[in-house]
Length: 247
Ligand SMILES: [Mn+2]
Image (cartoon, rainbow, N blue to C red; front, side):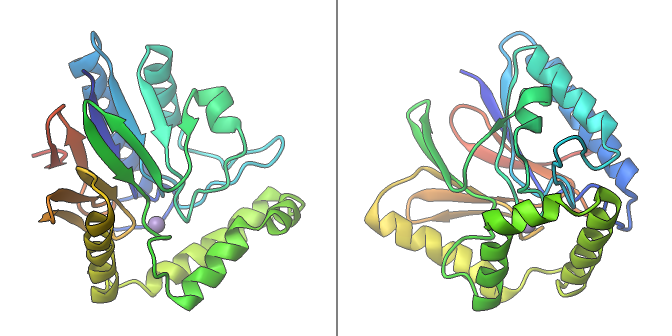
């Protein structure tokens, strides 16, 4: 039985109190720790979205930087670890590069599976219903095939510049504490799901706020972030717990 680690919202490339490269180094420390701890039996690593503040794959070009993270992830997959990526609202534009070059398996959101007789419901979170109208519009635009094709025609320097402006603006609108509306929406979603069916674990991200709660017989975990909290969730075969890196 392999352990599973859930990590999200590093927003690498974004300006923050802790500089991006420092956050990236901390994240690679955690990944190296996972490698050392599990090099015999291996482990699953689930990247739960918004690892990059902006990620977009042009045909012959990807955003510059992040070499430590990408090297470490490749080392893990080359060594037999399985790394999964649930795209976030900031880094959903992967069109094969992460799979081809890094050996990462990209999965769709929500992602459900059964492992060790436990049922998992995994989602980055930005699509947890009912999505507010303004966010729904932007989600539709970001997922549009036409918009993606058009964006591929934009020179990467200009494209990344536009994306950074959007990302910065969207962050300005988000207070350090997640909005009550979203906190409640996620919990209500778990409650409603549990009254229809049963999952043992719900693992979400996106709120940048670590949460662990028992709701109607399920454990709901939010992975927090790698901007200020430096938290991750770990499934040890039996249950899921939140951990803070560096403690
Ligand atoms: Mn997000």
